Image 1 (cartoon, rainbow, N blue to C red):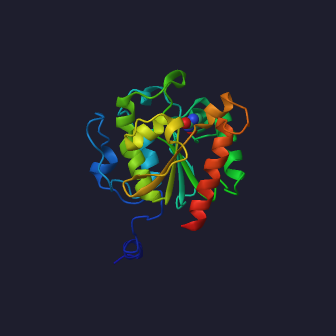
Image 2 (image 1 turned 60 degrees about the horizontal axis):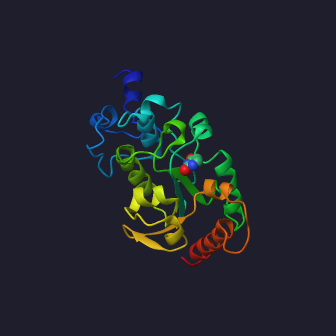
Image 3 (image 1 turned 90 degrees about the vertical axis):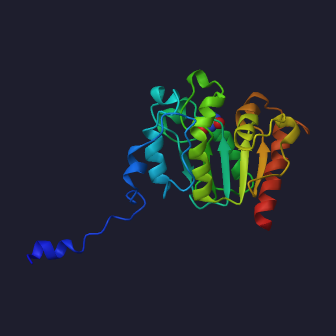
Length: 231
Ligand code: URA
């Protein structure tokens, strides 16, 4: 056997996070119809999932995106934060919560000692920006939901924070007003979730008076900190 042939016996599929082996059915086929599910267990890594999100046209938002916004932070975090959908800055950078809402979210997290890169994984219900930042439609949410469910499976967080009523409804089906359910623990698929106000709501309501949205957020984030310290 030639040296070259013998050496080729050492060839293995590259098995780092970016190149894990998928079947051709998985790599080549993203169902275009939102009603066709993407089964749990499809993705071996977040890198594979992100690649598919950037090639996805399961809904019309794919046509206008600059980047799919998949997530940022620690892939093994105990705490996951799920927002609604990317805005302009997120679409431009490919990173969730990097605009004004994101800056406020960072401050809220830092106030109880969370570091968004180390302690948290942040993502959204929808990976592509809706035009004019409108609320994603039920069809757009359904089309994107399998990616979110895979993200939750891969990160396996102990606690999930859902920012705003759209995120709560999209993940859990709970249609309650956010002012009614924020700060309460709800169980979804065996996981502990807390609805919280969306940071953009706090930007529109800057009062810090007792009972104001910002004051309530301060109560909620302290409860989240205490829960994670206890778990
Ligand atoms: N609002 C969201 O819900 N998500 C983002 O990523 C940015 C703003």
